[in-house]
Length: 136
Image (cartoon, rainbow, N blue to C red; front, side, top):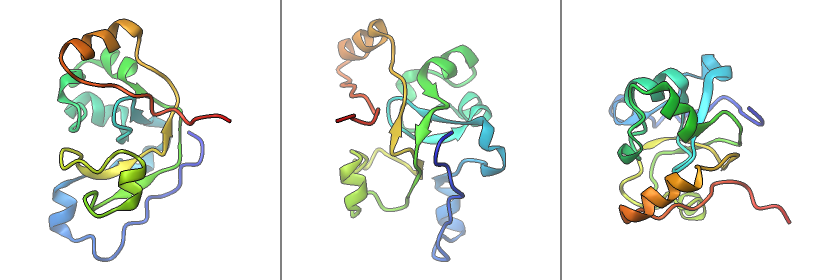
């Protein structure tokens, strides 16, 4: 994982926020992965146990193969998102919808869904855009 730093949460991050947030276990940095759809960062075990809370349509909870297909261990940067409705960073990262949970997100994620999977999402009315960094 390139550029991963400890996600320093502010003192204002109280117990209620912690209960309503998705926080990766940073003690297991080598296990961190980012969702290819929304860029949420969690460990492999967290994805396998709970799926992606932002993307239930990916159906990855309990399916290690699906977790591997829908997440990537290769991502850049980390954003701690506490209030996506008021954050310019959330708008910049396309995370400013109320559906996105509080948590840590990658700035960019390397990897893409297979074309057939993107087609399935489109049939269900779900628009996918790559979270890979744009190279100039």
